[in-house]
Length: 178
Image 1 (cartoon, rainbow, N blue to C red):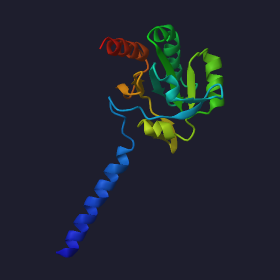
Image 2: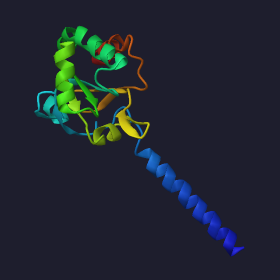
Image 3: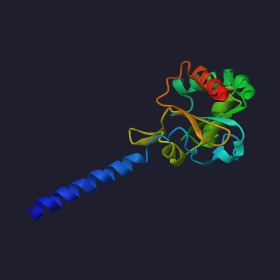
Image 4: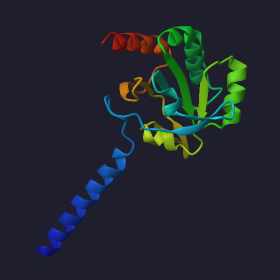
């Protein structure tokens, strides 16, 4: 009987360890402090979340520069940039692409907001926004609305790019009324 007890205890420990490992990939919860970061932007400058204290931050994760869905999402944020400015909000895009790729993407698409290079995928991991695509790590398409105090105010998971900017603006307006 002790052999079976040992196997049972081992199985329980293994299950708990797996659950703990998967919890690392969970999205930060609304009301919690947004994980801090320090990444290089498309201009080659260091950017941290703390730089935007006192502003609303739209932190959006996307898989890859120059792809159709990511281009549409970026264009829509650019189209609505004046509305975000009026709402005291900044837009920050994050992917595992390099700062140089972001620079080229911004130039090609006329983007006037910052794209951040998460080349080691650590920030994407912190925000539970990482996917494995044929053995490569990419940022998952999730968006986080962070309030001026640095807390997660709203999470948009598995974003559909069409209409997403409007959805974020509506949530921002609603949260600012509270």
